[in-house]
Length: 123
Image (cartoon, rainbow, N blue to C red; front, side):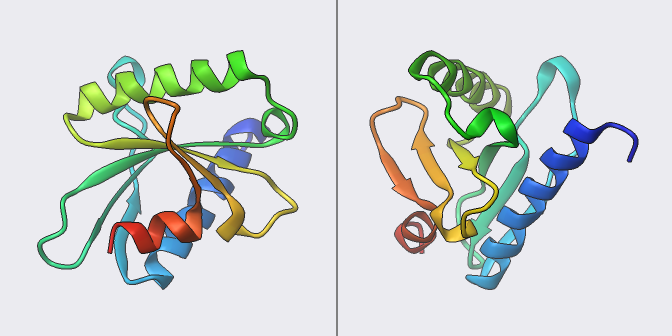
């Protein structure tokens, strides 16, 4: 992959998918969709689980992000939620930390938990 930023994004998304798969979720990366983006990962739990989406942010920009940056990511996630017509969450994957410690935010920006807590919450 020639684009380093895209490679980092793919690596972060793959880490999240692999973690969800290890927790008995069905999860897969979604294809890029341009202006009508519908999130990075689609997931559900069990045979009757509601399909939801995750927007993943990773790389240097996640190391010390500001409130305004987080709010912009949440705005993007809300647009993707609308495009996909599904529940969506923002996931911030910080390299050098365990994947279980990835931050998960609701689109309202008020609900926060770590990925392991998030995975247990939706089971």
